[in-house]
Image (cartoon, one colour):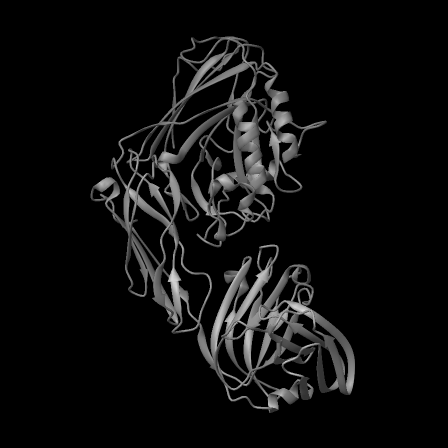
Length: 596
């Protein structure tokens, strides 16, 4: 870091006034600073972002987003995180009790301190109705090729400061950052890809140029003025997130003490020079497929991609080639209208493919604005997604381990190849932070079995813990080999489908282990009354009629010890195919029935 002082403009002797250059000498009102504490896993933080953007920033106030705390974690899509050492130090000195919250001009006392988002605008307006004793003026430039950032901050005291020493802090934040944000739909104008909560972050704090708490400006009185200059080289990145020179904004603020109340602030978009290219395009992200299907099944790939403009001129057109497992589809994009460092999500047309065990996808761009892209390193995006695996089992055991919210949020279904639900575990059926099992018998033959995992809150089954969904071959009462593993920490946010092709000999021995025998469902087809008779070992059994989607239409719970029979009135059910489920803590037995 290189600091340049204009010696004629910054004197430490009290009462000495130097000539101002650009800063106003007329008293003006304060400019407030909102330091907004946020996190990518915070439920209501996108609403806080929206309030800052729509209610605070239009007033002229400076807003800075600081990612910190337990709700700021590793990005599940891009890796790394948006936290910084400087942001952490600020958060330690100005703590909050929840997110989203913020400090306005670091003011404490009655009615101030850590504020919820509903209070930000009013407090900002109150502060900005007051006259400031000092005015600030900023000039800044960035050489995009060398990444050199130059900043010049000029101050002028139109009134008497509360102390002869104040502190000037200079920093920068970044706009147009593509990252994961939970519950992004609360701020829809910033959503790139809703299905994966990929989001546009603005005003994201990157660093302070002259130290976390700035530097002392001494000997102040009415008329004091000075200019402080800095020149730094922007780092390449923080964590895994690039520092893009064209997306940087510079700010400065004067505070009463090193960690005292902020008197006023200023911000500026630097002037940019020495761009390497006038036209340059890149792929920031391309979707794979989140869900699985069995090998050999037909699939379609219709990804959303995020493209960016990284040259000095506006990007308008692009050619796209994409496909799965060697397939190739082409599409041309027009009217992109992307200025430098701006990004846009684009939905591509569907491209057909056949599922393999591992499926490789590619997206390539070319011909930005009809010319050869001078930088091709970011013109391709590749990745892979799973197809289903295979296994052999007459009965499967499903083992689930989740977080402390399983009972309230989580559910799953198991379906056969025709889409009929053969096991439905609705919300309220699982226990928090506990390993549970379900056993399912499979009919003879080879079938594609799918597993649909759901989390109504949208943060997966493994919030602040490890979780899994395992499928085992379960013969007799012996736990065999693991057929499938779904690690919901990595693959499940709201909804996920896993698939595996299982071959079963249809052994009756596995049925006996469920404690259910001599099952009879009659009449079949049924018209008015459907009877379900079975013999069960001592326990609680739930007998249900479900449609093929797994929706329970009728259900009875019975204490059973031996032969039992239950009856359902089905005369008001629509004609069609249904499923009868006999379930206990030992597993579930499925029978098909037709109602006419």
